Amino acid sequence: MRVALLLAVSFLFGLGPLEAQIRPEELLARAVAMSDAGEPERTVELLRQLLNGLPAGAAPPLRREAHLRLAMTSWSLGLLDSAAVHFQAVVRADPFLRLDPDDYNPELLTAFDAARRTVIAVGVRPSLDTLVDARTGRWQVAVAVSQPGQVRVRLAPATGSGGGPETRPVVLAVESNAIASFAVADSDGLAPGTYRLLVDYSAPAGTAASGLSFEVAQATTDSLAHEPPPADSLFRLEFRWGPRSRGPLLRGVGVGVGAVAIPLLLGHHQLRTGSTTTRALFVGATVSIAGIAAHFLGRPKQLLPENIEYNRALRSAWEERNGSIIATNAARRTTPMLRVHVVPEP
Image 1 (cartoon, rainbow, N blue to C red):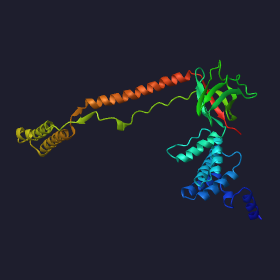
Image 2 (tube, rainbow, N blue to C red):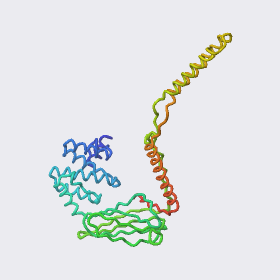
Image 3 (tube, one colour):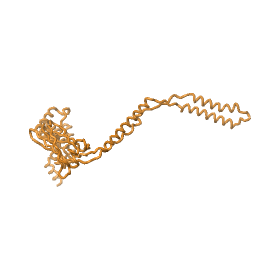
Image 4 (cartoon, rainbow, N blue to C red):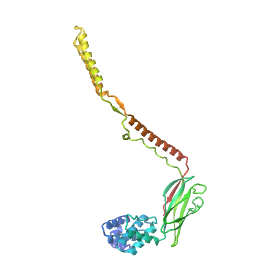
């Protein structure tokens, strides 16, 4: 019974028994793999199944990619009318999309541009989360149209949001893409609250509209982190060891020999005992060892002025950059800021 029900649902949505259970992203990946493997008919079948089964709330990029892949594959099979329909769907889903001439066949680009000219579509693309200086900043919104025309962009407070008055509309003559910007200063811009961005587009072939919601709130700017000190590997050696000197070796050995010989040669023969001789030998050996150690360990340091100057400049540059960061943070703490955050559409 379950199998029969699954087959019936799959048939209604144009899916095979297996594809009915696959996530849209996985089905798109499978279609791309089929396209890369040189199986355009199977690619078309999978993409049609994907689009037929997509819910209304599916992610726009997924829908756009599926239509674009289906349009290109249909075009390669000579299904030009089908390709045009899906190219038009691509433009409606994303008026910003442009195909790179270096990546696509010129004839396919011509078909895409021809489909674009038959569609009336407008799109807006603001930064999703932006910090703006509340005194002098401007909030920017990118606008794209399918055909040259006039675009009217305005900001209106949402009902009961407590936002400021509706802003003066920005009117632009747009060939393809343009930027609309709005002042956020309290005198003529945005007060904290919830707003609607409204876009009206008119072209010789018709009109279209778009919009989105966003929130404006007071914000504090995050401080910039201080730069860590330069790595040890960046510094150069500031000195090197000079050659060993024979002077300490000769002096140490000479004094040691003298410390042994003098008590033995000048001491009274009756006072020369075993302990005296032992002490003389011990003193002489100690002094000689000290001289030998001074020869091997007492190498002089030779300073390297160029490396010392390089290291000094490296440290100074780091301190100067951190000083600039400190000054920037101080200025940020005294600058009133507004955060503009786009609200996802339900």
